[in-house]
Length: 226
Image (cartoon, rainbow, N blue to C red; front, top):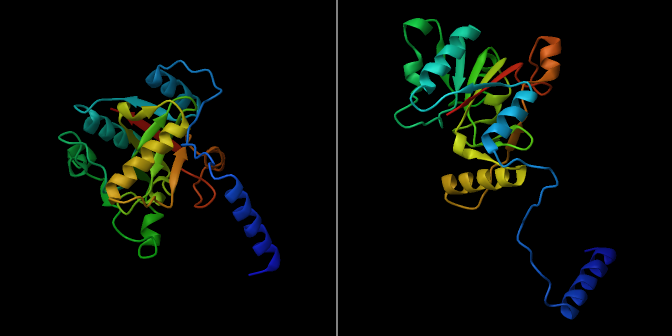
């Protein structure tokens, strides 16, 4: 160990010996923004301002509403994350009916290194959002083996499914919600490598009329509220 590093560490030890009662504050947040506390309305206004398309739905109609988006967008290949579970309401296999006979549903269950060419030719993805942040109009995603990060980045169109009760007031609350979700999912305190906030569609992808991995996100985004 270098002399300078040891000197600094010794100073810290000496300081702690003279000040044993160092307070340990819990993480907290107090926002400076003026909030309406009408979380749903505030999220819809702000996320719409971010140029994303809001679709109002519920558990009875969400399957129909997603089908309508796929039909209207002319989706051909649809990538979906295996973690999409909306009990008795949404079954990805049910997306294939006579009106969507040409749509190929592709579960994201393999490594990008194994199927890079196939993944980057997919036009649409369906992703479960963890939360919505009302005061700035963004959605939160957390990555895990059943919800790979790339699913929200590589397609031209992305459909996010967001439960209304998971809309929170500010980003700090959103981070805490996603951390809690991942800890419960994993059964330990290890957090994912990625907690992602999405404001809306990529401006540069829309201008350049293409999606470039590592540079852009989807050109068009939908948030289906249920």
